[in-house]
Amino acid sequence: MGFNGVGRFTIEPGEKLPLNGWVFGNGEDHGAQYFSANPTFSTAGFMLVMSEQNKTRLPGGGVAYGFTVENTDNTPPVVGTFPIFFDVQGGGFIRGFNGVGRFTIEPGEKLPLNGWVFGNGEDQGAQYFSANPISPIGSMLVMSEQNKTRSPNGAVFYGFTVENKDTKNSVSFDVQGGGFNGGFNGVGRYTVGPGDKIFLNGWAFRNGEDHGAQYFSANPTSSAGSMLIMSDQSKARELNGGINNSGAVSYGFSVENTDTVFPVFFDVQGGGFI
Image 1 (cartoon, rainbow, N blue to C red):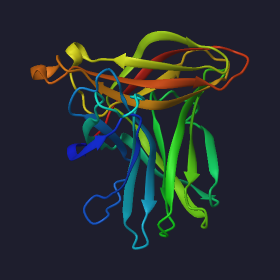
Image 2 (spheres, rainbow, N blue to C red):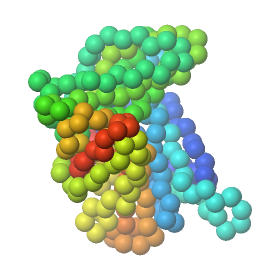
Image 3 (cartoon, rainbow, N blue to C red):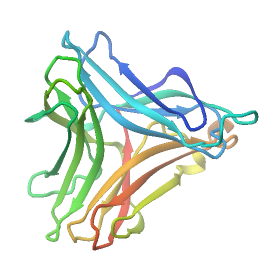
C-alpha cells in the first residue's frame, strides 16, 4: 500500500541527502518499492530530485529500502537562503512481477540489464524495474537508468541498471517491478536529439493538485531502436495555490537519448503507486 507523510526532514540548498534503511514492520519484504520526497512548504522555485532507489537484504533476512534526495537550489547557504522541508511518500506497483531470472553482481559493479520484453514485445506503458537481493549479507543494490526502447518492428523493450555498493562482496539477485496506479499515457509530443538529455519539469495536475508520489516516463513513438533513459524524477511546491491553498504542486523528470545518430520522438506516460 502507498504511504504518505512519513517523517519530517530538512535539506539545505545544494545538498544531496541519502535516506536509507527504511523498513516495513520487522523488515518485511514488500517487493519493489519507490520512495519520494514530498515538499511540505514552498520550494521557492527549486525542486527536490529523487535518485538512487535501493534495496538491501539484511543479514537476518529482513529487507531495507532507501533513496536519495537532492535540493536543486545551488545558492550558497548564506543569510537569506532557506532549506526545504519535506516528508516521505511512495509505494508499490500494479500488475507486478517478481522472481524473474537469477543474476550475480560483483563488488562495486554497475550492471545494465536491458532488453526486457513482455510477450512478443507488447507495450505495457510505463514500467519500473528493480533488483531484489537474495544474498542476506547487508549489501545495498541501487537502481538507476530506467529505460524504454521501441524497435524498428514496433516491439518494445525495457531496462534498468543495478549497482552493487558493496566493495567486498558479490550479491545474488532476481528482478521485480511493475506498472503504475492511475496511469496517464500519450501526453504531449516531444523530440530529443542524438545524445541529448532534456529536462521536462513543471508538470501539474489540474489546479496544481498534489497527487502524492508520481513517476514520469518517456514513451518512444519513433521506431529507430533508440533507447530513452529516464532519471531526475522531481517534485516542487509553490507558496500558494493547490488544494486548500496548500501550495500548487508540479512534477518533472529528464529524458536522455543514448543514440548518437538519430533523434527520437516521444510522448509522456506514468502514474502513481499503491
